[in-house]
Length: 149
Image 1: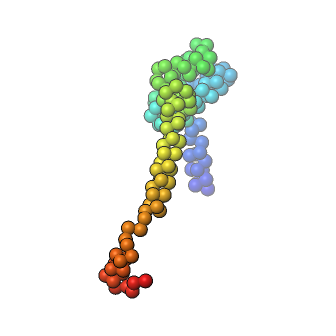
Image 2: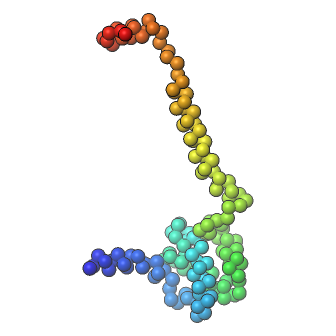
């Protein structure tokens, strides 16, 4: 029973990240803030959203985001503000345009290059001609102590 309680507590831990003092009174604005904070990366925790993170910086980012929403920013404006302030790294799903297109295409391109190099290396090893003449093969068999064919 204790294990079950511990497992359930660990699964529910992301829910504890947003402090009730941070939450907005208007449920519609709070829902927008929660949705947007799930799209922003915590700079401390790396692949965790600021909505899930308990880091102090994530809390500050959640507060700034809520201030922008209360100020009347649209979702796009609020995200643009966060990107302008903290860089594109803050987005959990960065744009696939501009300079980022190189990053999006680099991994598949490198995989294809590696496969091509591996394939050509294997083909080159198969195509190596027999370097020994019949006399040299007979001498080698004699040295190895086997009967020559």
